[in-house]
Amino acid sequence: MILLYTEASPFARKCRLCIAELGAGQDIALRDVGAVSPLAANAAASAQAPLGKIPVLVRPGQAALYDSPVICEYLDAVWQGSLFPADGEARWRALALQALADGAMETAVALRYEAVFRGNGSGDDPWVVRQTARLTSAVDAMARAVADFAPAPTIGELSVASALGYLDLRFEEIAWRRGQAALAAWFDSFAARPSMQSTAPTL
Amino acid sequence: MILLYTEASPFARKCRLCIAELGAGQDIALRDVGAVSPLAANAAASAQAPLGKIPVLVRPGQAALYDSPVICEYLDAVWQGSLFPADGEARWRALALQALADGAMETAVALRYEAVFRGNGSGDDPWVVRQTARLTSAVDAMARAVADFAPAPTIGELSVASALGYLDLRFEEIAWRRGQAALAAWFDSFAARPSMQSTAPTL
Image (cartoon, rainbow over all chains, first blue to last red; front, side):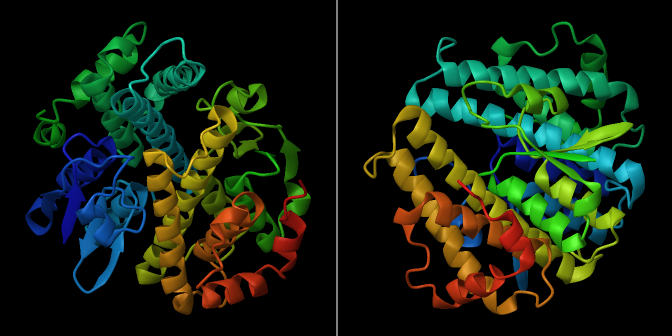
């Protein structure tokens, strides 16, 4: 199998974290497809996935899988992991936490695109103001949830780690650690895991 | 339980389709929170979900659930439906089809926001051109998949129906039926289901 990714994508990092936590690295090749822009198709991504987004999991003889929640659940099933609780409130907690972190990533990536491709990073623009507020609100919700984080990480905790790692990479000005000591302490401890170390963006 | 929704949202319609197909309508109240804009917070949505997006499923005494894939899987589990195949390729097919349709909805909603809130609906703008191409590519992929659509609908088919219904509502100019006779025939037949009739947008 081949995971199509780009170095900076937090959604791709989430999949790479799953691969590392599952010990599946020897069986899955990583292929960096380079930049994915909202203004032009990435040929490698578009060849495997109609929406042209990454990550995509290319499977020999079977349909490619996307997007990241589907890829992660598939990997967890094939490698018989415990990243996705089978049922009950534990499952909904993990999936809702993933949705929260994925929503934060989507908002952050949209803000990044707006700044890079349209030159609009202004704190006065109503769209930038509202999207920044959503991002801050999502971090607040992660901070409220941290007391219930699972000791053995689920897809929820891996997603939060990917989202916060992306904020560190691209949004230093948001300073998400300010006033969030418990979340920052959790992240800094989590960041020492081998899966986090081996997937840290080198940009 | 209460589902927060807006009439036009294709993501909310997907959840309402699940409720109708599961026969859960008597136990779930629907609450229309009005417009959700990328420029200002919707108070009702933001009170229940940090990202302020709809749909949100409000559960008495338990955490609210979002976004739509989590809500739909939860409803299917509680009502013991068969919208989410338990495992194997059937599950990955259904989830990837949902991801395809959700991606089409996200792209369409973003194009709609751009046109309504920024007055940018121009076919010359590189962002509009690229996002329209992604939408067309997603419809092409749905058309290729239609031969494998499940006779008893899964979350994949419900998602495709929601996405195509949204294109009919907001993107007449895209004319998705053109050259897609098989997909159009499937949709027109599917649209006769009571779940589709009872959730058709009345705008």
